[in-house]
Image (tube, rainbow, N blue to C red):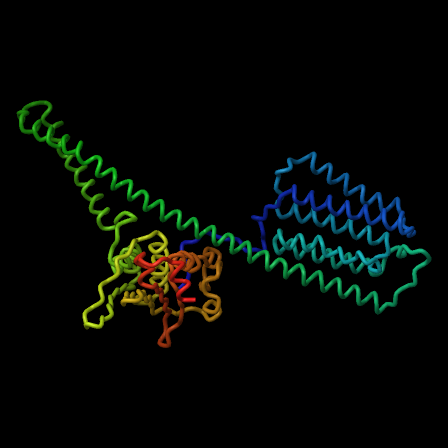
Length: 451
C-alpha cells in the first residue's frame, strides 16, 4: 500500500524549482564586506600588522561595486534560480579565497570563513549546486595550503610545520563536507515537510469545496422546487387545453417534459443531500466508511479485486449489541479513509477486506489487502512525506498518499498503525476514542487523557 494519483516530482538532485531572494543574498554580501573592511582596518591601522592594504581593499571594493551593480540592475524583490544563486555564492567564495591568499592562506585564523558560502548554499540550493560549491571550496582550500603570501605580523612570522598545515587543511575539508551535506539534508527535510503539508492542506481544501458544492446544490434544489412546480402545473393545463391540431401543442408537450425532467434532477439532488448530508448531519459509522470507499470499488472490480466490508459491534454488559456511533462526515475523515482504501485496492491481488468495529469506548477500521505488503524499508518510516513503496513508476508518484491520509485523520483524533500480516498482505488500523469521533468529547481532552 502506498500513494496514488500524485503529481510528478523532480528529484532534489536537479533542483530546478529553487528560488532565492536576491535581496537576502545582497544583504549577506554587505554584511561580509563590512566585516572584511572592519578586520582590515583593525589589523592594519590599530594592530599595525604588515598588510598589503591596497590589494586587499581592491578585492573588497570589487565585491562592493558588484553588489551595487546587482542592486541597481535588478529589482530588490527579484528571485534567483538555482544556477544564478550558485554562481553568486561561488563568487563570494573565490573573493574570500583571494583575501586569504593575500593574508597568509590557511595560517590566517579567518580561514574558517571558507565554510560560510557553502553553509548558505546548503540551506537554499539543490544538492547538485551544493556539491559543485563544496568541490570549489575544497579546491580553493588546497591551493591556499600551498600558495599564499606571508601571514601579516609584526615581524616575519615563523613558517608552520607541514604537519600543522596538513592538519588545518584536513579540518577545513572535512568541515566543508560535513557542514554542506548535513545542513543540506536538514534543510531539504524541512522543505519536503513544508511541501507535504501544503499538499495536505490542498487536499483538505478540495474536499471542503466539494462539500460546499453539495450544500449549494441542495439549497438550489430546495429554492427551485416551488417555482418549478408552478411551471409544471401551467404546462399540464396548456397540454390539456390545447387541441392536438394546435401549432403550439408540440411546444406545450415539450415544456411539460422538460419541467418533469427538471423535477427529477432536483429530486436526485435532494436524495443526494439526504444520503451524504450537510456538515451538521450525522450518519452511521459503517455508512461513512462505505461512502468513503465507494468511488474506488468500481476501479477495483475492473482489476478483479473484490472489496468486502463487514461490521462488528461489541456486546454491552446486558449482552445487547452496542449502538453504532453516529458520525459527522468531515472532509478530513472522508479523504483520509478514501485514500487508505484506494491504496489497499490498488495493491490487492484478489481481495480487500474492510472491518468496521465499535464498542462503548472506541471505534476502529481495519483495512487489509492480500497484496505484497509494505517493504521493510518503507514500513520503518511509514507516514513520512515523499516515501513510496512503489518500485516502479517512481517518477510519477511523490509518496504523499499515506502522509496526507495520516495527517488528516490524526487531526480528527485518530491513531493509525501499519503492519504486514504473517500470511502476507498489508494491514492498516485506524482507531478513535468513541467520544472524540462522535464529537461528544473534545480532541484536546482525549489527548490529555491518553497522555
